[in-house]
Amino acid sequence: MNGTSWRYDDGALTLVGEIFAPESPNGRAVLVVHEADGIGGNVRRHCALLAEAGYVAAAADMHGGGRVLAADHIPGALAAFRADPPLLRRRVRAALDAVMSETDLPADRVAAIGYCFGGLAVLELARSGAALGAVASFHGLLTTRAPAAPGTIVPRVLACTGALDPLVPQDDVAAFQAEMIAAQADWQLLVHGPALHSYTNPDVDRLDDPRMAYHAASAALSWSAFMKFLEQSLA
Image (cartoon, rainbow, N blue to C red; front, side, top):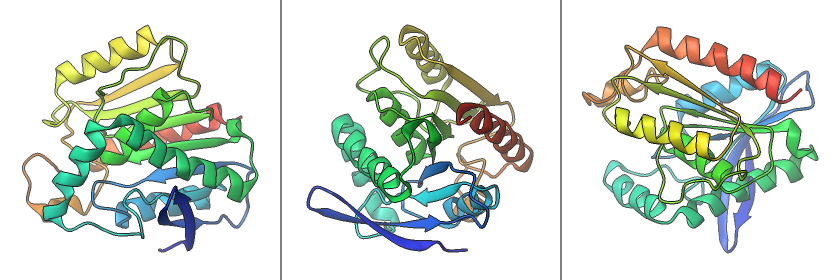
């Protein structure tokens, strides 16, 4: 399922996302940030689920032009974002501002979620002090070069990760917890014991990457927990 093409800008860069409009709007919106390559099936599936539940779901474009990166271009793009938190925060903030302009909703009725790279992106959005109701990261990287200062984080935060995820080792999980406590954030952490990286994405098994695998039970549990979290956060 594809949404409607949605154009917005980050400075001179034109970004092309997708808007999924609900048949019965509930007056809330969720920005959804893609994995490392770009908008794909996993993001579209979750946007469709959100729209079915009454949320305007907006799939952000982080690379420009709606591009989906080839495998050999992904490491360089991710390294550039990881090395420059202000760039990453500005790019995802451009999407948030565009969603709020598109929907004319107040900040406390808007959330941002992300998968893998997108999970890191929405956590950086929260660290930046952006005013919105909630952020949720699904198997995203949890550490940053620019930790949140005390009192900076406005939204409620949910991070869902796999205990077996080699890209998010236990030291990173502990560092994230320490950062959230020091920042005095309203935060939750959900750790799935059997899950590797990308556990929400049924398409990831095609990559034959031993670090990643779909885990249906963990995916269902994290989505159920998130939907309850969303309902509570965007009251």
